[in-house]
Length: 67
Image 1 (spheres, helix red, strand yellow):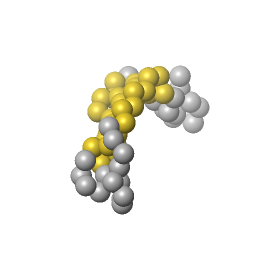
Image 2 (cartoon, rainbow, N blue to C red; image 1 turned 90 degrees about the vertical axis):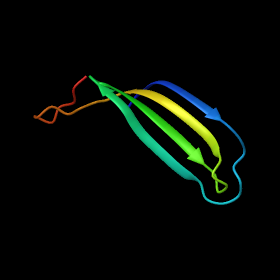
Image 3 (cartoon, rainbow, N blue to C red; image 1 turned 90 degrees about the horizontal axis):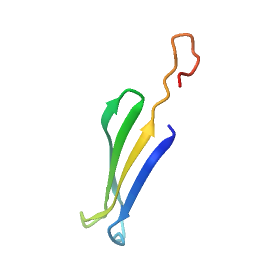
């Protein structure tokens, strides 16, 4: 999926340990999708966030890509 716009915010240095990530597609309209990602550290603090506007490429029924 080609990225058209990306905004990333680093909120802090993560605590030692595992990270938890949630990534969602919030809006899918036409051939565009708006994705949101949040990352929490082991202390349950949000340490990073991003939003991305991307172009969705679908395959036609004959297998050829659409534009």
